Amino acid sequence: MDFKSFWESQRSTIISAIIAIVVIAGLFILFNALPAGQPAKQTKEEKQTQEEKKADQEKKQGKKDEDEDKVELPTKYTVVRGDHLWKISERFYRSGFNWTLIAQENKLANPDIIHTGNVFTIPKADAKITGRTHTVVKGDTLWGIAQSSYGSSFEWTKIRDANPGKIGTLPNGNALIVPGQVLVVP
Image (cartoon, rainbow, N blue to C red; front, side, top):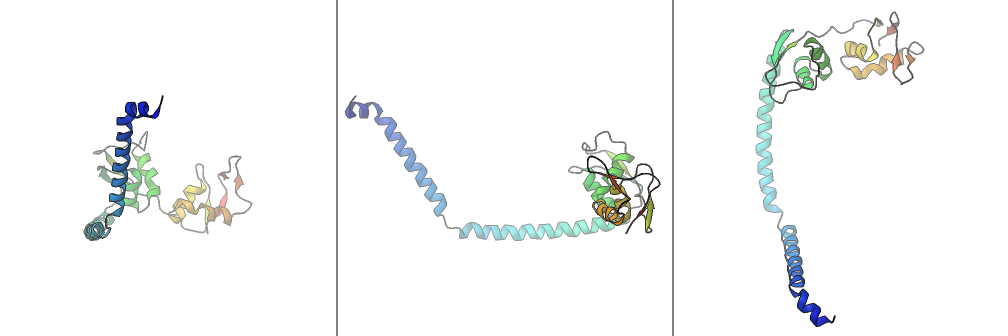
């Protein structure tokens, strides 16, 4: 097969490939060479509009928060679109970690699945532990004691560190406490 017969049989394919390369290169240059100033102005205007909307929403949310502070617990709450237990817990307790209280109170089989229109009872949260010690009862965990003491379960390490030699360790690495133990709660 010589070049002339090859050219005649593949001419349209080669010309199509060259045209495609030129078009792709032209589009690439066109989109990368556009001046960036014009879209930036639109972006600034959009940002200002978004900031104004966000400020309005924050003001409205602030009013909602003030109204929600006045709600006496226990109370009823109807789930709206976009809600999840963490969000509801933050609304009423100012801490997402109390979502388990809502799940337990409403006997939810799967707390990950809630539906718009569900009506939940929002229970009153347990009072925080006041005092310098805590006597462990059946079912207690450092996580739960920290939640009751500090309002944050992630502070459990403070209790562990304040009680050297009193808290054991399970094979899985979790802390071991037993009913009747008296723990210092710093």
